[in-house]
Length: 400
View 1 (cartoon, helix red, strand yellow):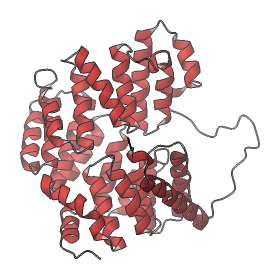
View 2 (cartoon, helix red, strand yellow):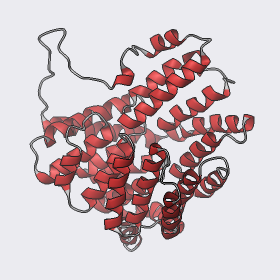
View 3 (tube, rainbow, N blue to C red):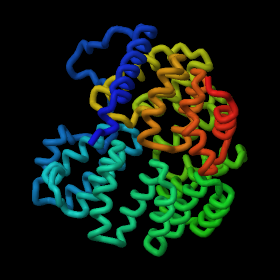
View 4 (cartoon, rainbow, N blue to C red):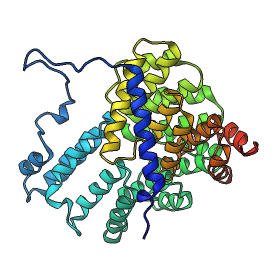
């Protein structure tokens, strides 16, 4: 069977990405590597959860094969830390903790659920869904499995399935979680207004919800408000979300995009000051720096190029959307950006993925290549500017 990942298109896309990264590095002339004069000089301070981990194999040995409950707790903490920091190394640490069971065909159900979370974070959606289906076969009422499955189905653009998975949460999770899951699907299927009202009501009825859930729900409410064109409400909800819980890289990135779309790059610089660890935040920082003429722009652009190349060499594809944005908005190479964006679209189909495809196609003068994406957005009724304007521009133009 011919696999999409082995196609000539995939090989060509990898070559294009290499060329872009080489161009970025060559044109930014980064300084020579820093060599510390003393062995005990501190180069980076990792968050407290990482202290003492060592390698993944060492962590696995420390836990021991028999300490399943300890391994599950430790791996869960590492996955949560990786999400908060936007640092993929934590996924490797978590996998190391689970190493005694990782390659088993029928591992304990709790291990399988954590393995699904790690695979999902690495955009191995097929592997994650396989694990989740096995979890649900063993525990049909496992709410966490249904919630993770709904999230993957949303990212893949399988919105009818996502709605069914959200419905399976009814009476199995807190009403606010159920409402947030369903409202996210509403926002992708032409019912953002209904989703906004549903979620507003659920938030009003859950003033003492868990901070992490509250943050997720308020962030979703902000996205729905933005899709409806209510920028004031969206900004209010974003600020409420940032204050509601702990650090969340994804939330910071979405708020930064909101500010960039409204021509407020100086506020992005303030929001993301010093935020260079997570690739997604470094990208937004560089986008704002380019607009403002910041002297840090060239170094940050070069750093992104190095990171994207490292991801490509490891065979990772979760970075394709960010790489496409960098190619279009930092390197001014729309054709390469379009190729990367289309490759990313084959994996995940969120509004942000559609947007970079449409932007790159219009900039490259290749609107025909983006028509299937525009038609998909139109068919689902996904709301919000500038996505709606881009769809109109692609479908309204004759193909060059």
